[in-house]
Image (cartoon, rainbow, N blue to C red; front, side, top):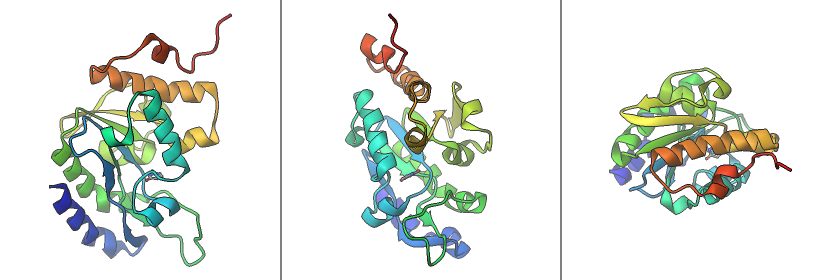
Length: 205
Ligand code: URA
């Protein structure tokens, strides 16, 4: 099913017809039988070059979060709302931009089909763009956090994008993302150690 979807994505006319997305299609990575699915925004410079989601700096941050949760990339399924790097013209260089509402809408059928193929126990939207696509809500991540939503029958949680942590390397920001992951681990009935529960809490004297 995924191989078929990947082929459909490669030739996905609604996205190509926009003329605002770059040519290289970046599909997904990880485990087709995963219980947990992570959905990001769109490939950036590094992801386009290596044709794999979350392999740049945001990907390294994501790997750290997964390691703290005792998960590896191979244990989860990692994909993006938009399968093509949004175009910024001939002088784009290494710059990236978020996909527009039209670009999100054009690619949405692909990620929805991936969800039906994977049938995960839980989905995490990494950032507001993923939430906009899967939940149809343009609300801020801050206001969407801490609640369960539904996408095609699968429970969904929203958290900050890993690149937010790169820009905002503070204890409260790390703790917020970690609380979202703890809620997901609980939902999936995975073991959480007392040490994991305390991660990123201010030290008490
Ligand atoms: N940011 C995303 O949202 N997705 C990627 O694949 C890489 C960076």
